[in-house]
Image (cartoon, rainbow, N blue to C red; front, side, top):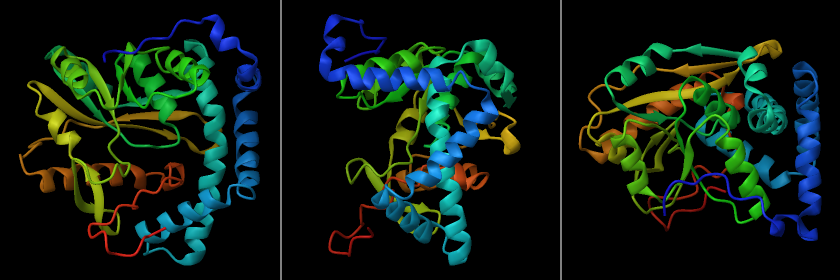
Amino acid sequence: MGPVHTPPLNATLFHPRYWLLWCGLGLLWLLVQLPYPFQMRLGRMLGRLAMRFLKRRVHIARRNLELALPELSAAAREQLLHRNFESVGCAIFEVGMAWYWPDRRMRALMQIDGEEHVREALAGSHGMLLLSCHFLTLELNARMFGLLQPGVGVYRPNDNPVLEYAQVRGRTRSNKCLLDRTDIKGMIKALRQGEALWYAPDHDYGRHASVFVPFFAVADSATITGTATLARVKNTRVLPCYTLRLAHDQGYRLVIEAPLTDFPTGDDIVDATRSNRVIENAIRHAPEQYMWLHRRFKTRQNPEQPRRY
């Protein structure tokens, strides 16, 4: 196991079983040549349409909002749900933008907050652990940060070879390479070498290497301890990093916050609580842009407890 670069484009990828997928990728390339505001309008329409067909995902997102944001009224949560699916539709186009747009067009829609934190880390030869989360703009987050400072991404390889080729090629367009999310040794090596490593620990990965700590209003959210493990690598700075879609189709803001201080502490509970709080604060800037479609709270601290979904 090691760094993943763009796989070779060989004849097996053009087997007839993949032709429809290639057509879909080609259509995505064509669509993202359209003017940006038009893409966003189409995306919002597509997201609203998707709610009629993706009933299970609608149920999961609605349940997540009930669990995470009980302080909102039912009507407010439902409005947020609809805005979230509009954002899901926009994200389809944003994947294409991240994978296919030239640097010039990407930079035209970029704003950067916190570039000084990256420059300071580079000046001190620090490894940078980019503490991020699954915003629907995550593909753009990697592309935009790479335009500032090429780094290393952490990802789950796709079983479909065409999608694997497309995502690795797209995600390394302005970055160095990818690492399998199970390649802890590779992540540690990258940080020791002073690389910027994108890391998103906000999904529920089960009980293995996890603790149960608060995330939004859920007091016992299964949370992996990998953030603290990587932060212990010598000379590493932990920089919260995420990308927000701006209102009125004005583009995107790449946010890089100041490095965390007094982290890690060595206490897994304290450290996981802290990283969750950092992620939660980022999501609260634009909760409609977060990936509420996954079962974030599926693992119960007591297996005998009723399922949440």
